Amino acid sequence: MPNFISPKINFKIMEPIIIYPKNPRQYSVIKALLEEMKVKFKAPAQEKDETLMTKEQFYAKIDRAAKQAEAGKKIKLTPELEKELFGGVL
Image (cartoon, rainbow, N blue to C red; front, side, top):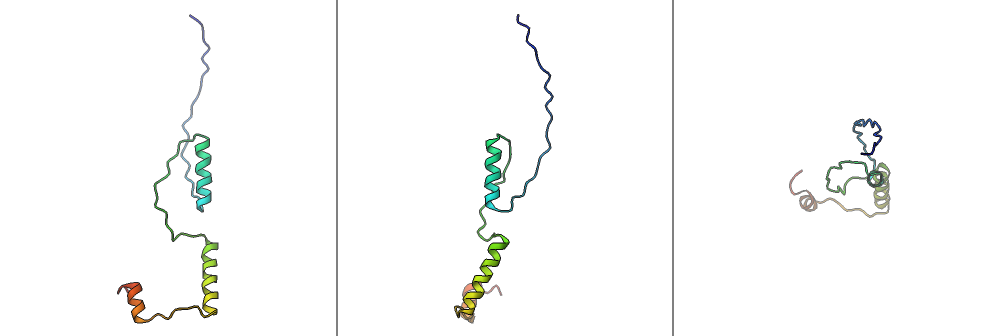
């Protein structure tokens, strides 16, 4: 029977790391990196929330709305339109 040398391997259990990506691009890059490195990870299933945006996107949207209002592109909120939009919530 051959004599095999068995090296002592000390496996250390690593602590989990919680990562909070700031935007979808960071999320996809981090996820791709972990997959490429074959790192076990768990990403919670989330519905894509179309209302989330970065601070820059938010302020750009506000700026566009202000420019439209200055250009006269605005809608008067009538009681009928209010009822249609808010359905009596207000």
